Amino acid sequence: MVSLADSASIVSYLSAASALFLSFLVVSAIARQRTRQTFRKHVLLSAVLLLVCAIISNVLIGIFIASASGDPQAAEGGIVLTKRLQATFDYLFGIAIGAFSVVATTPSIGSRRDFVRYMVEEFPNSYVFYVFVLAIGLVSIIVSPVTVVSTAPTIISFEPYVLFISGFAVMTIVLYATYRFITHLHRTNPGASIRRDTYLIILGISGFAIGELLFEVVLPNYGLDLRSPGFIVEMALVGLIAYGTRGRSFLQDLLEPTAEANLLTKPAFSLEAGLTYAIPERDATHAYEIFKDLVTHGAHGLCITRRSPKAVMAEYGLERTPVLWLSRVATEKNALRPSPPEKVAMAIEHFLELSENTAVLLDGLEYLVSHNDFGSILALLHDLNESVVMHEAILLVPFDPAVFNQREIALIRREVRFVGEMARELHPITKIPP
Image (cartoon, rainbow, N blue to C red; front, top):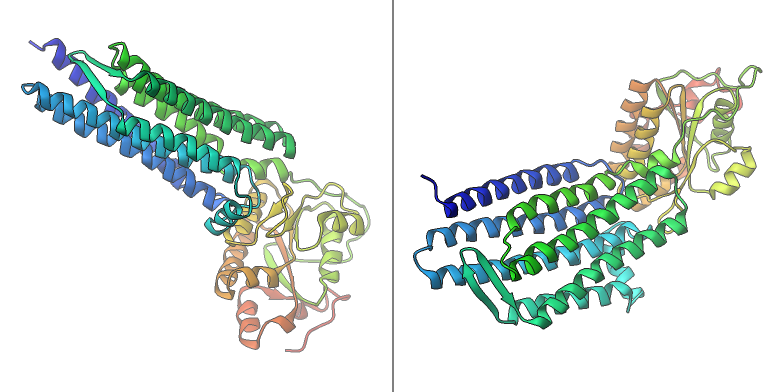
């Protein structure tokens, strides 16, 4: 017959296994995200992995405690050790999730280098004080005495100041994340989908922090050991964070496939769908003329440009066509960072998936090369060319031939069609010499 203690152990192991399974799902979901915010994804992934380490350490020490049931001193030592390991990973998770809050709400941070520069230039900043509070909480857990009143059931007594510091640290996490994200919403004024996802992120972070205080500190102090089921609840809350940052929301909010107009006049340019067209010229004027002709004759257009979006929209009369600003320093919500190039690929591919009869203008090939390398941008053109073929779209890529050497131009020619080879269809464009 199974004893009550054995039943509790079985429940604990099943709960821990369920939490580990949820952890695997959340980690897999984050790792597979296709997002232009690669650094943000890595920060969140690091935070979740710290939480997984906490779960694994508790499972292993739980097994040790069960095996040491005949030695009360060893069991008590194991309980104290598991609490301190748990606290270490939890506070490290809190520090990482705070960094995630900073990265997710600061458009200028797109890499580790950007984050370090932000910390240096904005020092002292709110995140520094946030880390300081959590560090104090971690130290208090590690150095303060912990009394194991009972091992069956597990009753742990903490010093009063530990309870106070832990509660203060949890409130710091909740208020800091909420403040960062709510302020970001007011600053960017996004659509309903972005707001919903942001509230899910706030709920996930706040719920996890409060759950940790409840399941790991408060309840054990009163003889209630619900850590194992608490893991499941906490991982579900972290899953909300992963869902809210799945990487496509900002595109869904900014990129709405809409034709600028449906003029009944005959188009000035006749282009075959399913091709990428390279347009060699210094100022991209003809490329914009072709793009405007396409989007005013029924095509769903997307413009990615190095120029100011407002200037482009005013000059070419684009009122409904989404325009993304290819910029490394701009903080507008329609800014698209040039590195890594996957950010540009994701924006274009997402737009192609949303629409039919699509025309995309990518103005800034030289800028992309300057912030990456020619090989990665050539690979970008190759991937985009395949997407354009699959969706029967049109991609216009103006570039200054004087910036590239003959070998690079030859490699570009292999991936795309030069307009110089289509002089009869594109009369206004000067044919370049071979």
